[in-house]
Length: 315
Image 1 (spheres, rainbow, N blue to C red):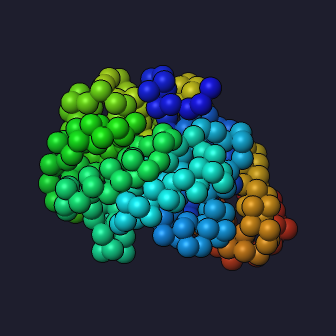
Image 2 (image 1 turned 30 degrees about the vertical axis):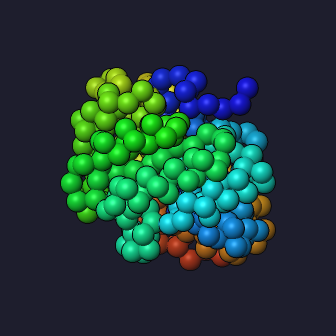
Image 3 (image 1 turned 120 degrees about the vertical axis):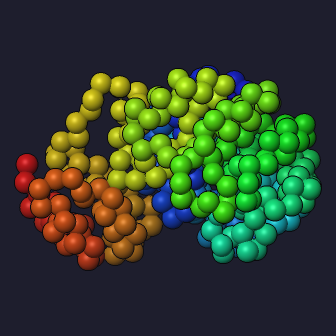
């Protein structure tokens, strides 16, 4: 049966789209740990249309990762609709998501991402053109507003034009990642519409994920971003609430497995090792000698070098 947001059962735990992070190697690890739905990094709709081969690579996924949602961003509804259809035809994901939530200045400055929340009429026009031009499952990820919480009416409009689901990060664009995500406002929006609403923001532990589900029952589920960095086990802990201790042996296994997957994915060992360095920074912490091990891992160029470093971690 084809994926439909309206058929997803509560509660659902989702891996957030993160640029240069949620590509196939890490995403597939999170899926195996128990993530219900996974998102690709956001892709430029212009890049998909005008440089498809290189851009498809970012969204490429394994059949075992499904349901996979490919996230796109842009400023032109026609180009975005074309990009959505190209992705759908080439990769067959479970759905497409429109990014109206990224607060990065280089994105908002080009009238993309959450920059579109400065003008709801314009944003609605763009999303509507995508909805009219794309027949598959279409969701939107956004924030509470540009400077203040004023997105509630806009979400209602998204529902009216046929958007299938909404994810809301509980901060405004101007807040960036400062302060705390306001889940009360996310819940308020969820109560105002009949389509599924997913909450996002500040989920660092499995306990926090379950607490949000219990406290905000109108939400379909939660989306986890930074809490998964160096910690794909967060999804395993969600599914097995009893405290899961990650052993040094398990830590090494996952680091090596993700590294091997990255080498296979990129087809270039040295490039893969450079790509993995940020992940080593997230993985290698909270054990005796972690700082020294992490510093050494930041310079690895081969899998053998990594294995030698990991062998020095005390059991």
